Image 1 (cartoon, rainbow, N blue to C red):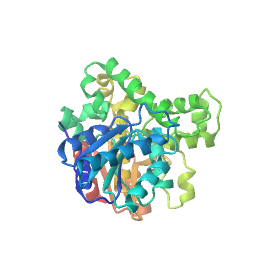
Image 2 (cartoon, rainbow, N blue to C red):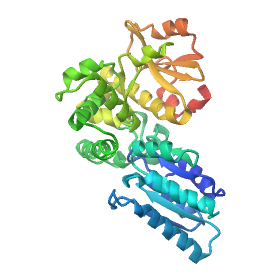
Image 3 (cartoon, rainbow, N blue to C red):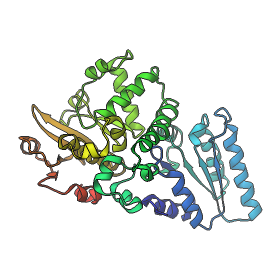
Image 4 (tube, rainbow, N blue to C red):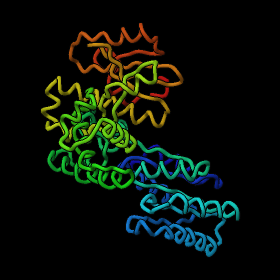
Length: 394
C-alpha cells in the first residue's frame, strides 16, 4: 500500500521517548486515518485505538474513560510504554481541556503513555491546540495529495491530475465522470462544509457560506471583488461576512482568496481577492466542463493549469512557512508571489497561449525579487515544478 511521507514522520516520533502529543492535521479525505493504521501495523508498542465518531459531543468524560483504559491495559501488560490513539477527537466538547488534564497527570506521575490525536476538522483542532495545549504537542501536517503522490499511487498523468486533483478516494472513479462528480460533492464537499466548517465556526448564514464556496470554486484563478460576489449571491450579507467566511474556508483547506502583493500590509488586506482552490477537483466539479472539453479548450485549460500550480503552492505554504499572494498593475499581472524571510519569489504560469503580459518584468523592476520565473510554456515544465522540491527555491 502506498505510504505518504507523513508515515515515516509519525512512526519515528512514536518510537521516540515520550515528549509531545502527536497531532495529525489536514483536510477531509487526505488519508490521516490510513497513515495511522499503517504505522500501527509497523510498530511494536502496544496500543489502543478509539474514535469519537459515535460519541455524544456532550460526553466530555469519554476522553478520561479511554485514557483510563489505556493506562489499565499498560499495567496489565506490564509494558514499559503504551500508545493511545484517538480519532475524531474534535467531536467531543471541550476536548482540549480533557486531553490537557490527562496528559499533565501522566507527565506528573511519570507514566510513559504516548498519545496520537487526529480529526477531520482542522478548524477545531487548531482552536483547541493553540488555546489549551500550547507547548504539549507537535503538528504533523497532511495536505492534499500532490501530483507525485497521485502518479505513484494511482498512475495519474499530468493532465489527469490537473483536472481531477488529489483526492485518493476518487481516483478509481475518473472513467465515470458523473460517479466521480457525485463522490466529490457528496462524500467530500458536503461533509466538509456541513460537518467540519458549520459545526466549528459561528456561521449565521449557512446557505450563504455554501453559495460562496460554490461560486469561489467556479471562479478559481480569477480576481473577484467581495462586492461583485455579493451581487451574485442570493442570500443577503455584507462584505465583512463574506471576508470572514472566505477566511474560514481557507482554514479548512478548501478555498481561499489570495491578496495582492504589496509592501504596505494594509494594501494587501484591502485588495481584491484572487480565488483559489486547494484541490483542483473542487474547481472541476463546479466548472460544468468534463475533462475532455476542458483539456481541448486552451483558454479554459489555462485556468486549470494555473489552479493546479496555485493549489500546489497553497498546500506547500503551510508546511514550508511562506505566504502566497498575486500581483497586478493594470493589465499586467504575476500569478503568484511567494513571500518568505522578507524576500519574494515571482511565478508566472503559462499554458501555451500567447499574451502581452509584461507583469514579470515589471514586478522585477519594482520589487527586485529573489527569483522570478515562468512555469509552463517557455519556462520550467509544469510537471517538473509540481514534482520538484520547492524548498530548494526558498
